[in-house]
Image (cartoon, rainbow, N blue to C red; front, top):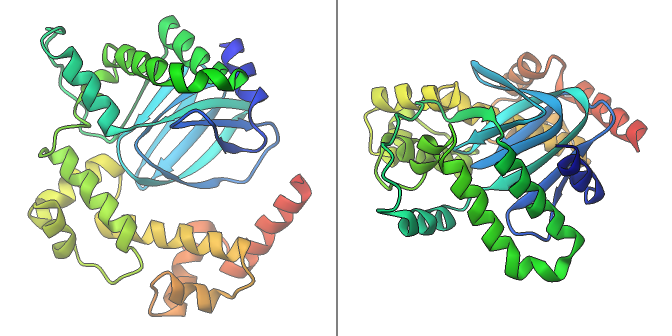
Length: 292
């Protein structure tokens, strides 16, 4: 585990760093930061050091050193880094790579498929074999000439070992085209693209080819929130990002992210983040300036 943490630290020049290895992001954090708004994609996070607590709607979970965390769909979360330093390697999942591996293994793996969690997230301890493979994957950044030839092979090895882990049943269900889980993923992705627009549960349900009641049940089980609350979280995250990074006002940002009423935006922003938009943005900019 220490070797994995050291490899991540060597190749991180900021909090989150996409790397030269396809689908690998390295995360290193040494100083405290405010709770962070993150937009998770389908990914697996391998934590080599530290601990993090994440919240999405009514769901929350903690992960720490030696654990791996699987998220199966696009999801807006708030993350609190509870133990520092924090080091993690993140694998962004590619459905094509996973499908090719499952086709290659078809007929070779006769183990019965255990029931998958109805949630969109699951965590489990890393085995020594998984730690070894992920460490070798990150260490490819030490020898860039090896990335093209070895990265796909090590990625496939990691996925192979994950299929035999507690993450396996849910991972296998990431590829089928017509399951409740895949329909929820499609709905979440569509909301992410259209979150600035006025949306109805009926329109989202039509995208998912589900009834509104069925969509609500499956969507809340996977994300911890209703589809419209999911949309609101996306709007507020984007509004906060624009307020922090741009020379703009809360009124303009409210309109840009889809709010018809600046008053409603201010009320929902304060309820979610604890401060009015302008004061929250000022506080976060000061923190970022102090950190640099």
